[in-house]
Image (cartoon, rainbow, N blue to C red; front, side, top):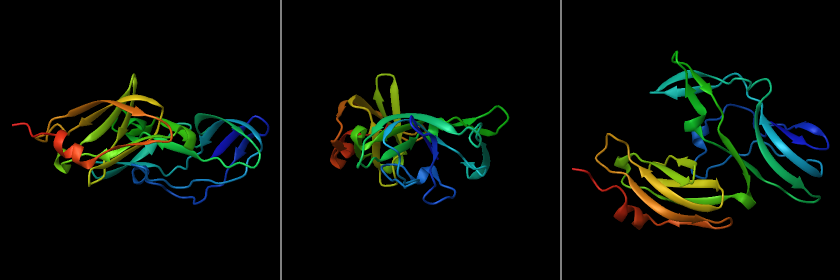
Length: 213
């Protein structure tokens, strides 16, 4: 990983634990530390990930190679504008949208087209809750204007969005088409930095996914 300082240019950060990571292990609020270092005072504008060459995606239980155009050379860049002041600590979180980042090409191979957000604790809007029953096999979408964020719940139905911008969201509980459950839509969920919006378990049981017969 590298970070761009307006004073020192690109600065290389040493990974805390080099290796291969399964991105799906880090969802619904689960995190892992990639790098930790001291940076010069001043403004940072960009970060970039320099990937290794052993990348893959699992499709229907089969592991397939995942090409990463420019991932090993120029790196995968994203913007993060932050003014660093003396004697301060900053946590920068990176959120991958795995569902939108992996693209199937015309010949059956797969390519990484990175869709990523970077945010700090000061810009970390959160929504969490439960989607039940598990048989609905649902995905949760948080929609704010033209922006859509996605969460894949755990086996017990728990889901969590992190790093959401402040604003008013609609939640779409998207049941798998082949199940006997209908989608549900919940408007007017307000996201404010510093507050976690929690959807109670009882609300999901009573209002989400009534069987379709």
